[in-house]
Amino acid sequence: MIEEEWDEAVDRFLRGQMDPEESARFADRLKNDPSLQEYLRLNQALHQALRNSPSPFRQTLERINVSSDLRVASKRGWILVVVTAIALSIFAFLGIYLNRKKNSGPEALYLAYMKAPASLSPDLAPDRTGEAQSRSISFQDSVLMETDRLYINGQIDQALQLLQSTQEDLLSDRMLFQTGLLLLIKNQAGETLRVFEKINAYSPGEILWYGALAHLKQGEPSAARSKLELIPAESRWYSQSRELLSRL
Amino acid sequence: MNNKIRAENEHILEGLRRGDLRVIEKVFSTCKPAVIQMVVRQGGNEADAEDVFMDAFEAIYNRLQSNGLTLDRASFKTYFIQVCLFQWSKKIRKKNRVHQVTNPAGEVQTGMEEVHEALADLDRKKIVAEKFQLLSEGCRQLLDWFISEDKNISEVALLLGISEGSTRKRKYECKEKLFRLVKEDPMYQELKFPG
Image 1 (cartoon, rainbow over the protein chains, first blue to last red):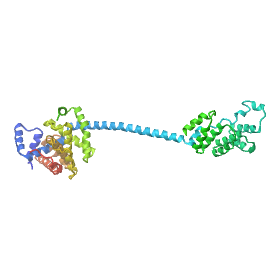
Image 2: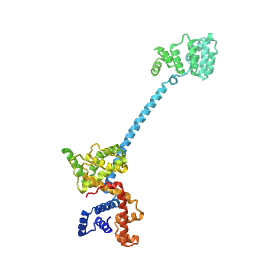
Image 3: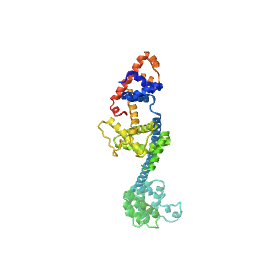
Image 4: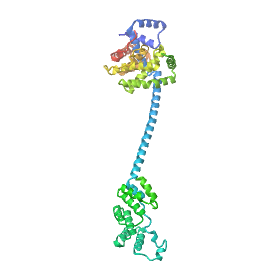
């Protein structure tokens, strides 16, 4: 235990208030008194803790530490940005890939390629060529002309009804084709295929093309592929059939 | 130790002596990651590593400023990490008295003599600051007046409305209480005073 008087001496020493004589006496005592040495060190620690905490050098270290942490955080921020960008790219790629995959399904391909024609029998329309009026019109042509008129007017059901109400032995292959086509337009692909099977001789390109689309509508891509491969080069559907084949 | 390392050590020590910010930053960038790795490997976390790093750095700096420092056995980085390991071993003993800190190099004590007291000063200051908070408000206020505000006995006596003799006695008693708390701390027992 240090006596109270030495506490006063230690305080004066730490405050630099000792004269040289007192300072020398204090140093002498200090040299030979371990308990005074310890008391002085504890007082020094107390002064440092209360007066100078943290030390100027420690403050410098803290500042540098913060700025280096900020640099690391900034570096981490950049890494995060890069990782996010990569992740987004992967998601975008997957999105495009899945969307493309979805778009290359049979139903999607059917929707992409199935285009209802503007008219069914433009060659028979009297107001276009004028030829029909000048020659005698067969029963089949008159039905086709009426069907075409109804179709152009958007009366698909009536057009189909007209064709289907025609006596079977009077049905031409062209009428059968248009029946199948109208059924396809009405999304009755199975019926289309059944009607097409009855056709003996009609434009093979047309039958194969719309037949292939009917198979796609039915979700039968391999059957569609078989038909597309048979489309002859002179058909107007040839280039589209190759394109569709590449997507199947 | 080769001449290149010797020259580099000199450059760093001289830079630190002058408080050269570029050198201080260089020490941060070269030593801090290694210290974090070492402390984390020894069961600490990043905050522990940061404390140890800062204490070691401050102790080395204080030692350099007071008595100088000679590095003739290892590079500055190796020495710095040894100081950190030495400091961490004390810290981990305080946290967990039975935990053993391993030192694969077996060189914890080697070369620590010079910086030991500087580290002990920092630890002592930390313990004193910690125990100071356990004192009564009256004692804290009184010691603050004397030390932080540099008031003399007569000024404090006036503030307290008591005699100078009673003020002196009260100051002494507050310090005694504080130092008793400090001495009871197991960590303090490890801080050996040079004879």
